[in-house]
Image (tube, rainbow, N blue to C red):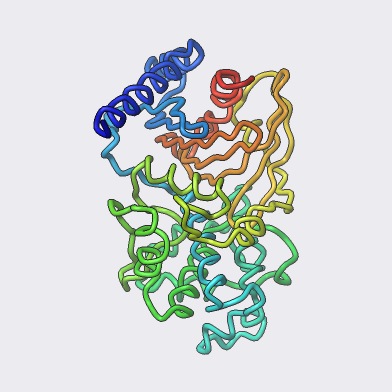
Length: 346
């Protein structure tokens, strides 16, 4: 009897998923990805509650293909920082002087964990507005990536201005390692990945063996979906609290206006634009198009890597893509507004 009930449950779930994916708007979206109207979209995974709205792979990518997360991994680094803070290994007010006694520059020693997580350290790196200097390219040429990041000039008071870069999450990863007494790779494995059942992934390492916590981490899109589902559930995964609800709220309470709209850069006609806002390596943006007026929380990576949560619709979404270094990396915002939200909108 149990086996029959299980089989019927699987059949009903499969039928429900098929009905969702047969939605004409979802079919049109998949067709537009397939015919390159939306080029270089490698995967789309969207769920609403326990319903799979769409799960499709393109351009030779499959369910078993690990994808470069690029800078969307910064948001996972924020989760790791939260776990370390939950464990009282460090606090938001701790400064670099505590973790890097070798650091002699008094101004840099005062930079706090909060300053790093908000991208407001004052270090001279800028990767968002073509102002520069873009530090990551130079960093990867060195043997010791952390030493390079700590060596960047301090040009402004910490906590003052937002300046997007890969320096700060890289330093954050080393702080997690020093605070926990283990490599950031092992810390992530024990405290985040294994509890979520994430086992198939690949770190990018410096020549010195330091884990890259600013990006270039390879994982399965389905595992990226686990991450954003856990965030949606306030840090809870299948009944186990992986990260405190307090940290999820604090880290995703994005209040720093960054003067940049992802919707605008998707070049979507007739959408209304508002600046995105930044939290602790997470973004939020209001989405406005026709009768849609909603908010999305998201992690973002170059090329079109997104982990998204839309609270109003209880939607979680993952996009991966290969539109590196161009505006088409923002196309998932148009896809959300024109196809995915209308497909599930009540």
